[in-house]
Figure (cartoon, rainbow, N blue to C red):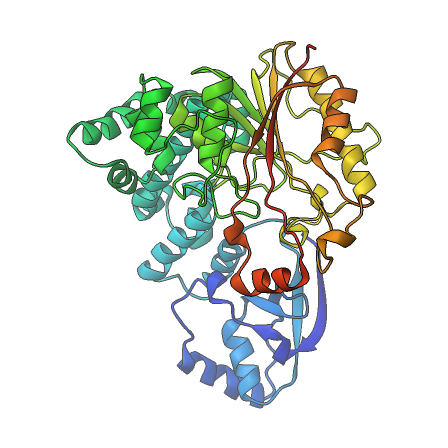
Length: 474
C-alpha cells in the first residue's frame, strides 16, 4: 500500500458511515482529546482515503475521535496519512484500526461482519474475523443467514444460465467460481426445479411462484411450459399467433426483458422462434440489451447465448459481457470458442441515430451513417465465419429518415438508411432473404403534441420496422 503524509483541510474530510465500524462517536472521548489538544498534546496523524465518488474529499479510515476533537477546537488543517488500499475492503481496514484502542462491541463486530459480507460475498470468515477481532466460527454465526441467501441467489443464477445452455466453463468464469465449486452447486438444480414445480402443481400462478422463490417470471415459465409444443406455449402465455407476414403489437409484454432503450416486444421474438427454430435449438443474440431474447427463449424452450456491452452480472448473469469493437487492430472478434454453433441468430442492433443519447457512448447508434453501415457489413461477414451453413439470421431494423421538421414532399434520399440499404449489404455479404416481415413500431411513441405539430407541417413519421429472415444459400 502506498501512502503519503500531508496537511489537508479539515473541512474536506468526512465520516462515511458505510465504512465506519462503530455505532457512533463517543463524545466524552472527543472532549478529552480536545482538552489534550488545547494543552499542546500532539496526536498521531489520522488516516484517510480519497472518496471514490468525490476525489476532492477524503473519508476517514482511522481517527474519527481525533478528527472530531480537532474540529471542535477550531483547527482548519490536520495532518493525515492518505492511504491507497489497493482494492482492500475499506470497512475491514477501518475495523482493524478501530480495535487498537478498544475492542469493537458485540453489536459493532456483528454489524461490521454483516456489512462487509454483504458488500463482498467472496470475503472469507477468517478474513473478516481478523479485521474485527473475532474467531472464524463467530463470524460464521454472524453471517449464516446472509450466506444462505447468497448461496440461494447463486444457485438461481446457475439454474438460469444452465437452463439457457451456457457451457459450465463459461458459467464458472461469469460467476467467479472454481470448477470444483461449480460442481457443488449442480446437484441443487433438480431440487430448485422440484420446489417451484410443486407450487405450480398446487395451483399457484407463475407470478406467485416467482415472487415466493425469488425467480424471474421467465424462469418459472420455463418450468410451467416444459414439454409443451409451441402452439400451447403461445396459448398459455396469452399470445395470439399472427399467421400472416405482418406482426403488430401496441405494447411490450412487461414480463419479458428489462425497461430498456429500444425495448422490443417479446411477442415478436416468440414469433421468430416459433416460425424459424425448434425447441432446444441454440439461439444467439449478439446485442441482447434488456434481455428480451433470453427471457423469451426460457419460455419457449430454446437455449440462448446472449452478449451485450452493458455488464450486469447481478441482474443479468446470462448476458455475457462483450463489446463488438470494429476499431481494434484485429477488427471484430468472436466472443467465444465453442464447437456448437447457433441455429438461429437474432440480430436487433441499436438503430442508427435513434435513442443514441440513451445508449452507452460506445454504442453503434451514435456512429456516423458511413461508420454504422460499415459496422453492419463487417458484423455480417463475421457471422458467416462463425456459424453453420444452415444457420438462419433474423435481422431486425427500421427505416431511418431525417424527417424532423421536414415536410414529406421536401425529403430527399441522401442521408437516410432504408430497408433497401440493408438488403444490399446483406446480399453483398452472402446472406439471402426468404422473408421480409412487417413488424411496425407503435405509433403511441409519439405524444399528442408531437403528432399535432407533424400534421400541421405534413411531416411523415417513421413507425416502419422489418424482420428480415435470411439464410446463406440462394
